[in-house]
Image (cartoon, rainbow, N blue to C red; front, side, top):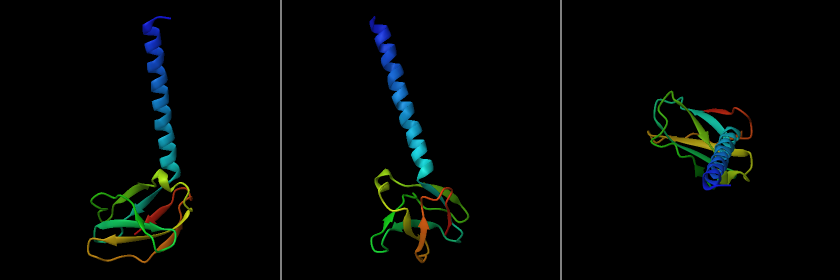
Length: 114
């Protein structure tokens, strides 16, 4: 076997590993994601989640979700061992905050309107 054959085999193997990682990430995103729609007139600035309604984590929604917009939010892999049932609440740029509501995030195609 010559050097070019070894190099070609390594490149093919590296590409296969990278492709598998991309497909695994895509599958994870589909399994642990939901859509959020801002039905308010103010920019939605935070989406907060909690298992116990005391300790709240948040999704990174950048500069916010504009009124009437829908976005796909993906759970971080670090939450894979958390319960599917989570409390959710939102805050808006005008200072208002929604009441917490409980959702099953293992539900396929989950949509939440805020």
